[in-house]
Image (tube, rainbow, N blue to C red; front, side, top):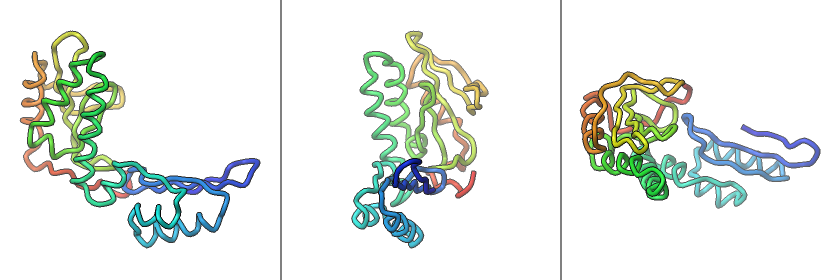
Length: 190
């Protein structure tokens, strides 16, 4: 996607692949935008594009996804664990859910995501494929709900409510379909 700023000469570009923001930046040189498009079209790696055009930026998740889905899953888990540690004082139940899920092999191979402090597991990187399992930690209650899906309103089919993060992670893992995982790239279009 290329966009143009109103009132002054500035061109921006966002590169997306399979529903994942991969690279972005802006420049006053329209030729640089064309060079970025050509490099993207050739399938250049993100580091190669950045070397060619230093104004382009990308994050660790995009760089990992540029290599393969397994690397993206590893980076997503690392980033999630860091976030959980940052929130440890304010919402320890969330951190407990992340740690309990991380050690479960079937969950560990899926892409973790969060939405409103719910912890979910996707079978794809980028556009979502198939079902998800979600753990909903209760703030201060010591309970954890495990749900099969997550709809737009944040509700899902309740599997059970349990009293520990370890139980919730085991239950979530048990409800991951047998043929699901490891995570793959999602489709180019949703």
